[in-house]
Image (cartoon, protein in one colour):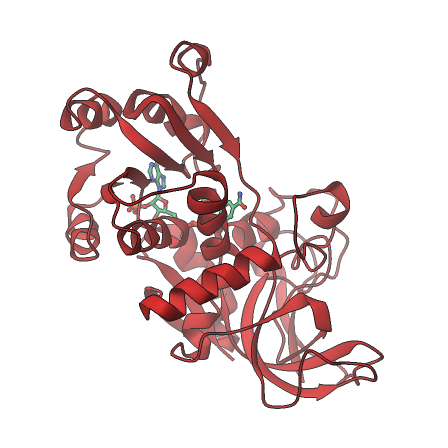
Length: 333
Ligand SMILES: NC(=O)c1ccc[n+]([C@@H]2O[C@H](COP(=O)([O-])OP(=O)(O)OC[C@H]3O[C@@H](n4cnc5c(N)ncnc54)[C@H](OP(=O)(O)O)[C@@H]3O)[C@@H](O)[C@H]2O)c1
């Protein structure tokens, strides 16, 4: 079977190699991967900007879906033929985060899913919704679970509330979709008017080009009768947080998720305006299962911007680097 390996930092140091086929041991499940998806984190990992102390070779990527082809002794949760996806942190089953759970993240702390076959512990998988293809299900483990955690577990999003999303990448498009599923009003930003037209089709009622309106935080405050939005799904990081603090209402919730931009932040508005800033690092299997139940009920379909072949991982990462995509980038295995 084939597997991708990162041999040193840099997209040019990825190689597609032959790897031995493995048998599942006690409690293990062998999955024939059918589709993978990219996260911005994968780009950071490959470039050496995520964890400079990673050891090589590393099998990259955290997100994938496939079919169970063999189970080891004592496996009770799965059988051959089951359609599954891996959970981002293999050891975060339920409850809150911990240092130990964070050390089980696929594709950095432990080997990832960029292979034709992957061995998982039986606890590290969820069943995927029946109405989703493997490609659609492969988009869920990191970006979608992170948004679920941000908006529902942390933010307790309710119908009629307002949500601000930034840009049109994987995380932000899930944020638009989950907010609309709940009956929330969405304010979406992007660098591109064409992408804003697409995000409006997904249900964003207000759209703002952050390039043509650099003071978009104030603009959004105006558009909400000077109150501000209830929730911000913050993916820009230091370079966008000041605008987000202008856009959010007094006592509102900012889910700090991304690190796409650099800059400086004045923390004073956080205290003067009683803003709840919550860091989010993906989520648990329990959150993934709750999210899948909601996705199934709503028959929600993730938005795939572009699909590549398994052999095209370097090309797919370069597409992500160019930020020309909309929603998720997927690889068919
Ligand atoms: N904490 C966590 O657990 C977690 C989980 C998942 C992702 N993340 C982080 O979240 C961020 C997004 O990840 P992703 O996988 O969704 O990335 P992605 O698919 O590559 O999305 C990138 C998009 O972000 C938008 N963007 C770039 N600069 C921006 C800016 N200054 N203001 C607003 N939007 C901007 C662009 O959208 P337009 O082209 O529309 O402008 C770009 O296409 C990354 O920093 C990633 O590391 C964190």
